[in-house]
Length: 376
Length: 178
Image 1 (tube, helix red, strand yellow):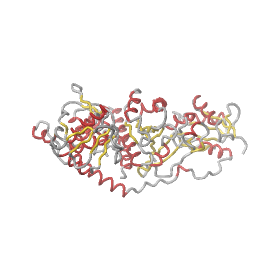
Image 2: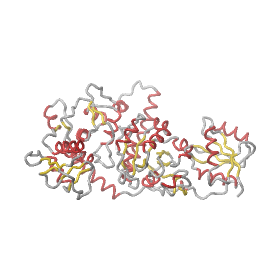
Image 3: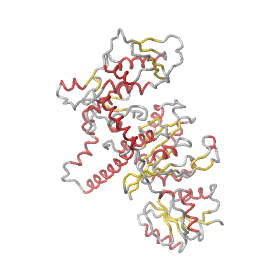
Image 4: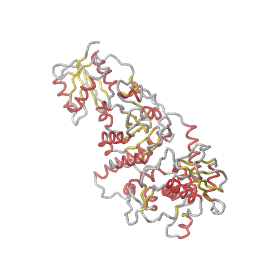
């Protein structure tokens, strides 16, 4: 096929220059950008505040030239075919070729393939079962507390001293500080902390039981490994995910007593939820507290999450050094403002109403995407 | 039909194409071609135009997954790709020599888009190249005033990529209920 001359209309200068670069790329030898004169094919961007006016101007300049329209919205114009943005170079090349041939039918575009959601039933069932197990083992089933009730507070908080979590945290700190591996002896199996990971054959359900009981110092203790530690017999598990998991098991729905209920806290960074256990509502809580400090009670209220979901996450974040307490800092009622939209809206301005509707629509689509990812 | 999109970006070989394939309901449409320049060292075939995948959300809603070309000379496509997008997934390859430069480049290139939406970061090849760790990327991003989710991911695993996108959605709206 001979070279097709193409003119670009209604694009910024930078984009025009970029098209020039594209047309000079390998594979585009049959297309040449024309800046003056009548092209064989015109490419026009109709995304503007007045596409009809742009089209009129375009047709005045290039009457009857077969054309390719670039737009995010459907465009039906005589003598032109529409490509929805974003446009791939391959689609553009194909459209230019079709325009040159007088719009011969093209093969079915690949992106019109009928979408069929995957049937993830088995995965969904497994995930649901796993979620239920995580909730049971890390969050328990205790009801929310009344912070004015001392018995409630005592029930929902715990002290890590004398428990495996404290011993493991201490051990990790020592190993990181001096690089010397240490064994935690007296457990139902070998447990060695190296600088680059933990070596153990203790099964998770056994280790979880260890987390829930008070340890006797005369039975469970640390021993520094002298000399070069032998090569690990089992694959090492990274320190942070293990510490995170141990803290979740230890908390089981409760809050570490080192975290005050009425002091704002912030999560410094997102936990690595692709590798660390993700408890119920963990992402929502993290997104809130990475963005703005809240007291634990305010965070639970703002998100509408049960205390048993919030408390272990905060306890685990503290165990791995991701939680920062900010005494004197104001708690930020970030979500509550949005939640107010469900209540009294008298006096709401039109603009505010529009924003609210837009926010609701957006939340709807985000929720549906989330559901789709969860296999619902 | 309502259409939404998420843009995947990152350097050559970081796993954008694979990540999109992990989530897409349709066979992803790629435009890989034989690499003709220095990218050949990292990936024999590289994406010169873009990748495309699709998730059907509801009867009349679709989520388009676009992957930018990894080669910087095609960055002119990026403005077009990001228009109307709901967020950015930055895929980084932990085996690359200058990961900080990668962060700086892509965060700068998508600065305006990130300011309007949200981003998350997926770091691949941490299993074979454990260093630098996730905290390194947090420091790099903090220099740009950003504190997004940074996850170790295997782009071949749908759970990993799905978790990354879930973090993006919750970053956009922490009040979002499952």
